[in-house]
Image (cartoon, rainbow, N blue to C red; front, top):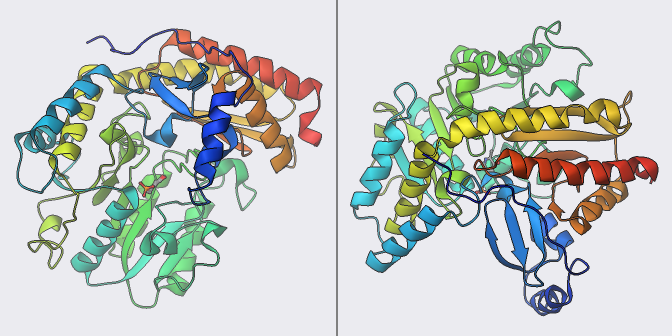
Length: 454
Ligand SMILES: Cc1ncc(COP(=O)(O)O)c(C=O)c1O
């Protein structure tokens, strides 16, 4: 079925950015909103009026091409017409409560049609962190153990259990954390902590992790939690044998393997589940972001055997106030239906390959691009001061690049030196060409003005 989103989308700029109307409303909001909103929203300073496909429109009449894509939430493209209709229909019927609805059953059936292994049981929640916490609780109940393993650079949310397993210094100042958190190296090959090269390294990161765990685990590991591709850390794509290695390690420790598919699930990588990129079937999956089409829905997928563990499986044992309510279920059902009937998994694969082919030459053309990588429609550009040392660009240089993209009509995550790209899965070649045109223009400026030195 045809993709029902506009094609060949292009930026329109009619004011300085942010425009006068945006500035006025932002000043009003600043009086009320707490600090700490997502960085790109603060930096962009625009007030959004509406959006469609890969285009965001502000109240000053400017249109921006959007390759942030809600950081993985915007799978369907903004305001997909079938999504709008389905939510309107549902809100007229019922929104609240955990009673069974036909729409929820329809969603489960769709999800069952794409299941891997025995993973056929779903519990729904409203945020990614909430689903991760629930998966950790399930793993504790199943194994009777409580230690956990996660990875450097890993991000699973900002609640306390997830924070304990976070592989970055974002968590500083929030201790004490849940005890028993073991963090071992992820296969970040561009910045290998051992200065080795794949495949000659023999996945030294996992070997090191194994030794670390043997020395550190005192009681027993309940679960390993891993992103098939690390999102927050910079869309880091590990070698194909990394995830199978993690699964093996989890087996060795008699622990469950949780694949956190928040970003990689539902087709973005060109296959339905990120785990499928390396043929691994995890014990549990956590899901979120794009299967709600913007509505906050998340979930834990487990098996017949695992979902019955107690007390997780008791009545009200793993439930929540909003989990699987009729509106959330309608959103999940229509988003999954659109992904399947409009072949968005295949489109991610094809358009991802096309996008990457356009981006790859940048690594030779520009002195400040250390690496370009991608898997389907999850891509990244490493912005560096020096290609040999891989020193990252200064925050000032990154801000300059982000702002210049913005002034040219492209909404990006170039405000950090691991520039992540994840447009909607409905994107087409024409829109990609228009994005690339802006990128070439801005990167040429970065080169000619020697922005990497600021
Ligand atoms: C892999 C992964 N897991 C969990 C989360 C947490 O999701 P949420 O922000 O919905 O709590 C995120 C959010 O970015 C994520 O990328």
